[in-house]
Image (cartoon, rainbow, N blue to C red):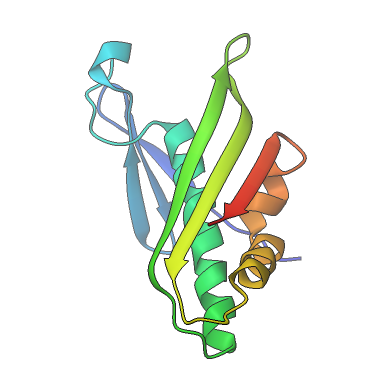
Length: 132
């Protein structure tokens, strides 16, 4: 079994910095929530990670089939509930410019099956991924 290691360090009054394999991302709260707005909030980072994971798998599936995708985009919308605060539903809309006859829906399904973030979140929240 593989292990992913992430180190998160405090950076300032409300910010943190995550590091993985030498790559870093800053997370913070907006000023309205007492932060300095120096990065995304952790929940926003979860959604960004989901989208990035999915898109990486989509592009890999297309590349393995010699299909060129252009202007590929993932738009994520998440419903937030309080008590405790959490995402209760996540919807992803996936679009791209691709050659006629390409089975884009199949590429989306392959990416969904290969996305570690989607596979992890699927049982925690209602997770919907839509081609289009």
